[in-house]
Length: 429
Figure 1 (cartoon, one colour):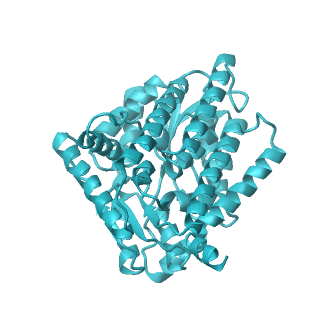
Figure 2: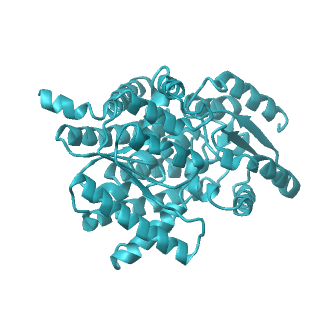
Figure 3: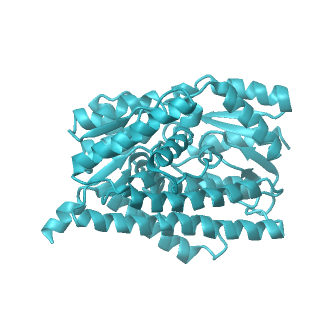
């Protein structure tokens, strides 16, 4: 029993996350009606179930592999391991714990890490500094930002966890995709050497095929979002990001999206809006809040504002070809990774993103944009103003800019965010 506990203690934050998810799931089931916020209930069940399996793997003593959110999780299915998405774990805990993970942000700042770096990394870094994580290896790309490149070496230099970096090129063409495909393959082979396993690419194919199905369902949901009123709830964007990042390539992820699709189809047929009446259609080209997801419900029910999608819900990839040779599969994996949410926007010039936003504004009949700017995301520093001008000049659509931290409520409290949005909506009505 002692040995089992020692093995599980290598991933204490995953245990914390599982416990908080389970408690929240029971509360949601017990308090809300069946049609209350069904996407939330389904997502909680899917993620907690997948985490139960990972905790069991940890108890068995399988190697613990941390990965950056820009590495699609299904790529690690070629190993028998405990996959841990660092950013996903930290931000999900910021949602579910009473004081979030602010303790670990502060721990890293006091250690000497700059305050203006990303809380997505600072949370799990602080947890590792507090010995809550014991990784056998960590896998990350050189994307999407300087925060990633500057923060991940901490795990190797301070905690001595082996760190594998896949170099992602700037160019988006055949040569660039071939280069990153080779980087992915070499990285997985190196990871296998570190944890003492040969990568099983046949097994990985099966999980990639699950995610191919997920992508098709997500696209169908995305298309249905064009309807007026929008048939998705705002909280779908937040919980979809969590499922998409934390349990990618699993049967639980597929089940989540299959169930959500049926709910969305039903609302579409009945022309229903989750909040009762849709008054404003908004696009959030960056992120919704994670430190308090109640904002999503407040927007739906108090303001009648639909969040049509955020950055994790409008980026899609072509299906990965698993039926040809391994090189073709890795080439498609490369294209998918280089088109990943935030990676795509961070590692290219702004022109493509501006055009994309303008096109989506027209296709989805948006009334406004709300851009949430983090102090950490310096690669996006000048983009909001360019986007604001383009939206107004081309389409006459206004944009609200809110400076906040997606995982730390102390930067801009929820009350202030609500006041800003409420004042902004008065100019739209």
